[in-house]
Length: 64
Image 1 (spheres, rainbow, N blue to C red):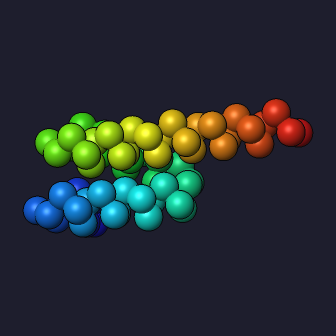
Image 2: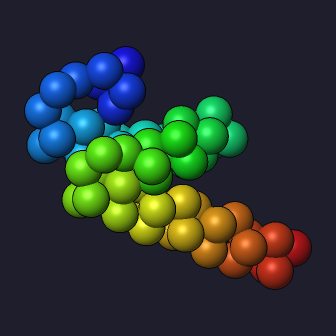
């Protein structure tokens, strides 16, 4: 998986964005791991996407 293995931070960032658009539990777990990436941009992107997915999940629960 590019998010865990690619040496290029831009590729890892884009992989995080793609996982964020999937938005399932597995994606969130991988993003959680990526939030500790050595590259600050990748880590911050993963963290922001987790926050966004949590927001969407809470919004859905409040509608029901």
